[in-house]
Amino acid sequence: MKKISRKIFLLLALSLILSSCKADNKNSDSTKEKNIEVEENDTPKKETDKKKTKEAENTDKSKDTSNKTSEKAKSEESPTEDKKNESEQASSKQSSSYKDGMYLSILSSDKSGEAQGEIGYCKSSYADSNKNIFTIEGSLSYNKDPKALEGYEIMANSTYEFPFDENTVFQATSGMAKPDIMTIDEFNKYLKECKDSGLGLVLVIENGHLKSVSISS
Image 1: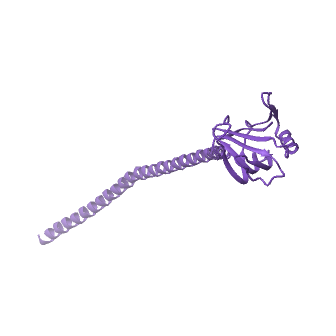
Image 2: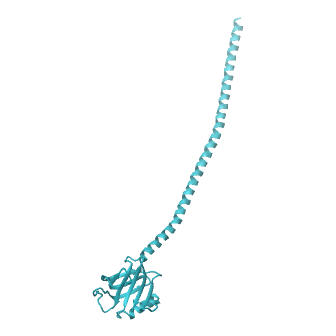
Image 3: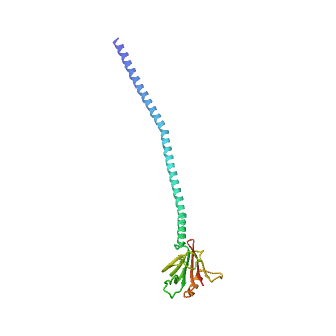
């Protein structure tokens, strides 16, 4: 009887051990399955993360491309702005700093250039076509009204530079006769011929620009 009971106990113990082993194996299998599931679940996440990373990289590249395009556009605009500024500067250089009105000087190179009363005297004068500057050495008589016969202001003996442009007229005038329009070279040549003539050298400035330079008799 004792032997039978002991066998039954051993069988139960063995059964418990086997049951425990199966449970362990089952748990192990379950753990493996869970690990597999976790790995499988991680895989889409990893792929999603990779996609997000690629999307972020593409976004950054797109931003860089956009920035470069913007910078390129600005750099292409810069030359236009520079040209505009250069044009404005050239225009301001051609504008005279002298007041509108008439400037008169008597051609007389043998004089010192000093004014006599209300009359200015020109010692020398020249039109520089390279610099677009008409230079007078001497004194000038100024009047705001080009048609005035009196009330002139004297500008002291000095060197005066008047900017001119392609619209400035160089001419010889005589009373009611039609003006003789000249090129700059022709006018300079005529100036040399008239340097001691006592003729009048007349400059008219209108709206800040030298409108005309005349040798008047």
